[in-house]
Image 1: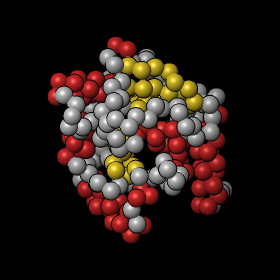
Image 2: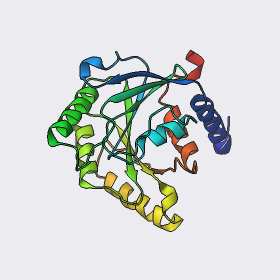
Image 3: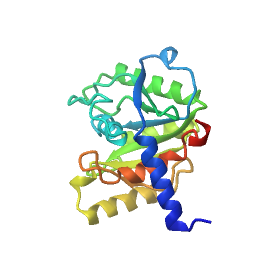
Image 4: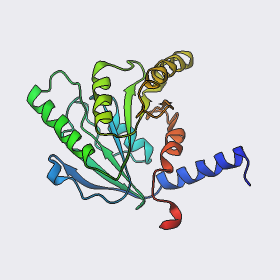
Length: 218
């Protein structure tokens, strides 16, 4: 039987293998009718506009331009679907909380995301991306309430962690973890990553690999 270190090593190897597999764009859906039919397990990425969702998806799979990165907050208006290694689908959700986006459009985005989550048996987890230098805001808490209403499991992931000193990053992680303890749908582990430096990406891959179709079935 493998000890703890061997098991961790095996998990890391499995995660790196999965996220190094071919990854390609499937679809962009601006309406729930355009969402692809459920198939492989899905991991969705949610967060405030300009939190770094597209950059994180690119870094996660080791691509530079898989998910388009926009310098204009609120630009992504569709649910973007990417298939990874025929074992997992990554979903880049529209950003929320950008003040210059009209209320009507913002409500439409929220309705689309809610409709997607409410009837998606293959959605295994939502990664809620939070800017490490900003922390949780009311928009994030509203998103968490939507996840909970849809009975969807979610996990907080701090982006842009390279902008904080290690001690400050640890403090932010602990504060968010303490708040999430009061939310039963939240995963207890709060991860910190940087798409720029690659810090924490291996941890995120390990957290997600077990949600994919097992390799032996492929």
